[in-house]
Image (cartoon, rainbow, N blue to C red):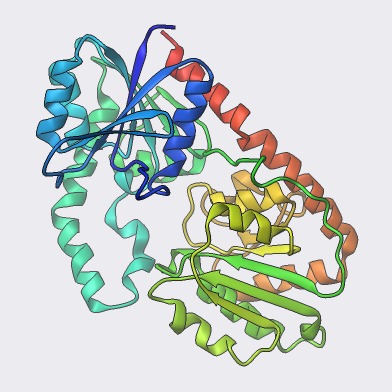
Length: 384
């Protein structure tokens, strides 16, 4: 196979920043293992000079838009297929201006295809944040969404869009771009079952509940987790529960301060690396992860892979990955009381717990294991 493929993205790992868009690197390595020759252009508008480096066997070029245009010009006969993550006009137009009959595979992850009001919960913290987003509402968002509208309508080039969930495509991307393209695939992000391997759960003693969530935004609904714990504290079995809450961000103290009084709630104001999360999964029974907006919920899927019983929210894309009472438990929207009730059900029902734990692990492998995801993506990439 002598074709070369170019990944274009807004960030990529390096030896100094190994977690920067690591999910893209995972894909590139998987493509390499399948025999594809894949290079990366990491486009950053503020780059002052071009930099070429190798990361984990992948050739990466880092530069600004001028560097990018020159790179395409110098390699116009080398690359025909472009794999783009977090697309914007600066990534797209130089390709069609330089390359004859290019083919595009475009992953739509979220913010690049959303209207500003989709993340309303981000503006609850301060007037300054609200002003910042309203400024972008007049500048960035209309420009980007008009670009997405034109891109979705484009018929002169071979373009396939990849969405991680049907919900996100139908309810967000198509609506905000004001157009629904026919050339798309639904392919979730990879859940690494080698890292998040399944170990059969055997409840011993307290029901141990884990939460690992950023505290950077109200999207992650950590406030609902705290409220659910307060409700459970009134139950006679509360001391037979144990909660560990991991995360960091500007909302951490605001949300967790009221939980300090509980001896069975352990607070960890820290960021966890993936390998550490997988180890911690082994120590717990339940993964508590309510949400206000998720196009997939990767951390939830990773917990399922490890065999934890997830308790999440019946909103957005979550039901595409969790079947209530079968592969997880889904609480009502914006309802700490419903979250608390699902945990109470698990406390009193070992049969339900054991059934969901095993079925969740197998279900998420069927949906999002590396072999399943990469096979689907390669069909799109290699379909000439």
